[in-house]
Length: 146
Image 1 (cartoon, helix red, strand yellow):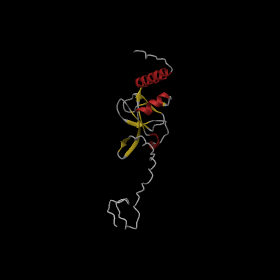
Image 2 (image 1 turned 30 degrees about the vertical axis):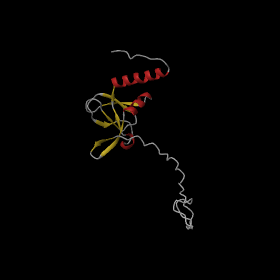
Image 3 (image 1 turned 60 degrees about the vertical axis):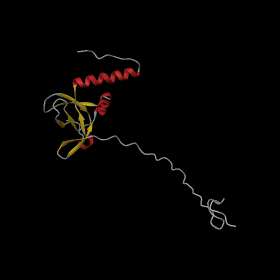
Image 4 (image 1 turned 30 degrees about the horizontal axis):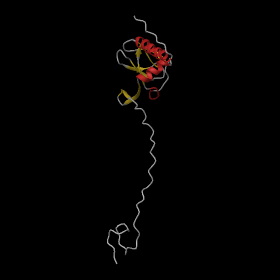
C-alpha cells in the first residue's frame, strides 16, 4: 500500500529511497572586532596646493597644560602670540595670517599649523587648567579680576 505525501517521512512517500534532508545552519560567526576609526585629521591649505595638519584647540590646551608653547611676534600685525612649540607654522589670532614659527626647526609636514593665542588667552587657559587640577583635588580658585 502506498502512503500519501503527509506521511511520517517528512512529506515523502515510502517509495522514496532518499532520507529526508536535514538543513544544518553554520555556527554563528564571532562578532567582528573593528578598530575605532582614527580621529579625523583637519587640514588647512596654507598656500596653493600645500595642505598641512591643523593642530586644534584640544591639542593647544594640552600643550598649555604641559607648558609646551613658544612665543612669537606676528610679522604682519606685530602682536605677541604663542603657539604649540613643535608646530611648523602658526595662525595669528589677531590678523589671521599664517607664518612660520621661528626657531621650531620642524618641517611643515611634521609640525603642521598651530593655533596662535594671545597673552590674555594664555592667562585664561592657564587659569582654566589650574582650576581643573584643583577641582580634582577638591579645591577651587577664582581668577583675579582686572
